[in-house]
Amino acid sequence: MSFIIKTIRHIIRWILIAFFGSTILAVVAYRFFPVYVTPLMFIRTAEQIKEHKTIRWHHSWVSLNKISPHMPVAVMASEDSQFLLHHGFDYEAIEDAAKRNKTRTRKLGASTISQQTAKNVFLWPGRTWVRKGLEAYFTALIELMWSKQRIMEVYLNSIEMGDGIYGVSAVAEYHFDKEAADLTRSECALVAATLPNPRVYSSKSPSKYMLKRQRRIEHEMKFIPKFPKEGEDIDPNTVKGGVYKN
Image (cartoon, rainbow, N blue to C red; front, side):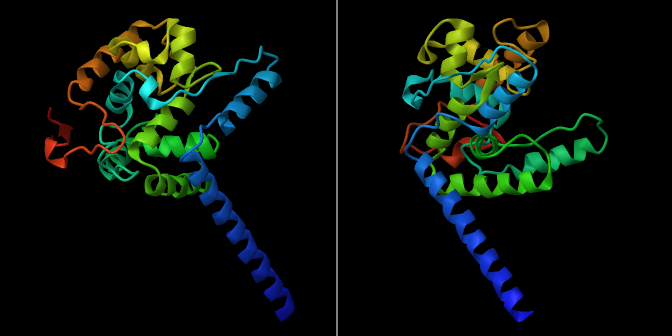
């Protein structure tokens, strides 16, 4: 019996070593190398094949300096206004969402851009406790090993922005017929407006609801500072009452 227990312990130990070693190595590698594919891209492709649809996979990597400076501001205004200040988790947003969800049928989320990046790059869609636990683990890793600029760069290149469209470069090409760097402030706000569900909401053919969200995001962008370049920091003293003051 003792031999079996020792063997099980030995196996578990090596499984843990392999897990932590491989995941840390992957996070370190993606700190420097472009993320060309994500699990979600393969999942969506499998869904298209299963449903006998034409395979749509549009994605190309662009560095942050080749993306419109309005785009990071737009997604922060839409998804995570405290992105530059928190360390991966917005606890106030989580608490607020938990309170609201007690009386709502449709649950609100409180995922930060860092959490969404961790999920997009390393995991799969889902709401199980295992998946959420892994998301928290990878979020902590990327916040520890990547800069905020790198997190934003990977996020804008990997997030789903339409049916078979991944990243800002692809959405700029297929929805606006231009380069990512040339997207206007309004166009960036419109793209950000689709992010709750980019397969339902379209930045190419926006509904009245989408245009309303676009206007709201453009307004919120006034309170978000210009996204800092690599090595630059934001002064926490510019934040008052939970919103940025320019």
